[in-house]
Amino acid sequence: MSTSAPIPEAGWRPTQWAAAGLAFIVMLLLGVRWAITEFSARPSTLIRPVSPTASPTSTLARLPDESSEIGTDVLAIGMEEESEPIRLERKTAPEAKVPKVTAGDGLIDVNTASIEELQRLPGIGPVLAQRIIDARRIAPYRSVDDLRRASGIGPKRLDAIRPLVRASRVE
Image 1 (spheres, rainbow, N blue to C red):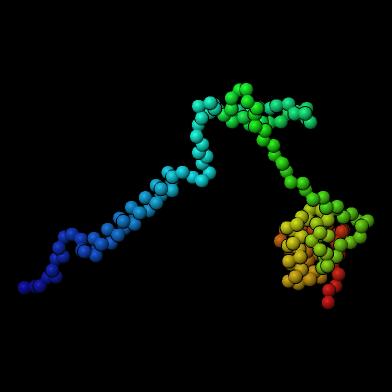
Image 2: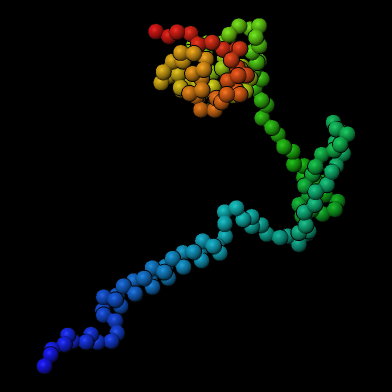
């Protein structure tokens, strides 16, 4: 007679039931969280009560402007015909005019120049000027070609500013 191994009973073990139950609960919680975030009101949603006197339409009209021949774009939102439309005007910040350097002004030393002086170079704004200064804090520039160490200075930009800059020896 040979003895055979006992045949395991059909069905799941208690640990398998526990793992399946835990996986079901996790999936249920993730589904509820998704549904809440997907279908809830967003902060960018504009909720405003509709008054019986206002029409729910929006129109874009071009009204004559005293200072311009073309006119001004005006957005009229839910307004009655006899009321004055709301004028939406876009104001831009005035750009700081930095006089650009020319070949006759003299060379700018990249090892001692301030941010304002570096911004006078063509194609160099405040961010790129700060990058040039940050790179020279690590190690001073030994030649104009070392400006390539600064992020944003490529071969074309370097060729454009090469006649306007110099790199002095810093001890």
